[in-house]
Image 1 (cartoon, rainbow, N blue to C red):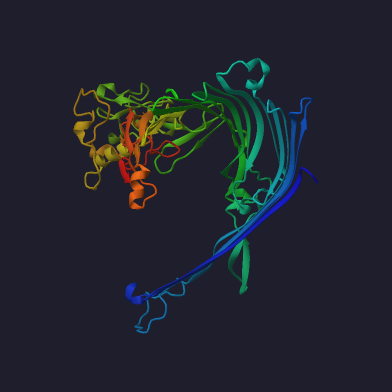
Image 2 (image 1 turned 60 degrees about the vertical axis):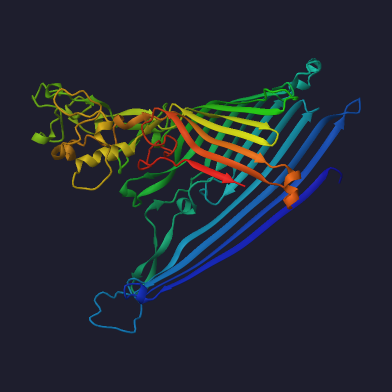
Length: 583
């Protein structure tokens, strides 16, 4: 049938891998070692598509009404299994007794070390209409089912709709030759992302010990099956504007969006009365909204021997926590390693730091507050002599007012997520020469300077080797009446109690805003009439410099090389500058 097309695509891959690794006793401390591995993976993908398109002409014989309809089904199946065996301290041709250290039986391990079996099915349809490419309407509807979801999730609907008005095609713009194109866009839609795995939804059974001399199968009590487990769902509303003028010498694109993320995945600890330790939960939601801008300028005339393109992009993003598990209004994620907890509170950003508030250093003993009821100075823990604050100690805010520093004195401080990001690029061409500059920036982001805190803490352990910050580079307390930023680094006796350079304090939270010179590249292409003399069709020479420098107030080595939570875990090492010569 005319304008009707049916197509089907199928793809099947099968791969296997194996490893046999034997180390003789001569290389293994007089004990042999055998490791074998077998892995198998298969993937099946099928997509069947039915498409119909039709265009109707107007009274002038021009294409006017365009229709496009299609429907498709999509199937994905993937399987992976890996089996391995480890046998250490095997048979030796020189046995000597007693064999007290040869425990080959208990060190022989074998079985399945990884297993995945995933399935997904989708059915979707789409309708698109345009009138002379002036008014455009798109509508999509999709149903998804996935084996990683709980059995009660079923098929999940994901609709989307968008409209676009190319208003430069209106008749009243016919005489505006300087306008190349201009449009306004509106869209609404949702999509899903599977989370967790099949064991989170259905539980897991594994081989147990022997019972009455028979093998047993037991239920894994680490996670309770969640039959209602659903994928993370993102619903987005977007409005945009695009324009280009003066033969594309100036172009601008602007977008504003509102995005709601529901069913965010995390494991939630549950009461031991349930026999299980935790459950895969979908009870968190947040909202992102912001604005994005992108512009391009080509300032030189077409007759100029130079071609210069300037590009800039800029994005402002705000994020708000909208829902927490069990109807909670706030939740604290405890960082057991560094004490840098995360505070979740409805109506604020999701990743707020939860730290001790440091307001300076006690210059003298008289500045330490005293409890009027007990007459005891501000302290940590029990009222022992070494537990009282004194000159040279940091001033931690006593939030609960009990004159004892504890976990209830932490405050919500800072946001590890950047609020504004962007960059500027320049591309200049002249004859065979090309000069390119790429930059980027991040504004309004808080970073925890862990390398500095760790190096200062090393002063508290003078007998343990470790990197140290030169004291002449910091403003530290060095005597009664000293006004300083950092506490006394030489109080070895009390440092284990007071912990003046603990990582979980605002002293090491810094502004992580920066402007970075990413790349400078010089490129020269040799003339082909010259290179062809030597049988070379094309030859170019380029010199590139990367990671060339920052403009920042951050005192650490690299404000860009931090974790997604804004933790600087670089160890104090900056990113190296790189220079590359290419031919």
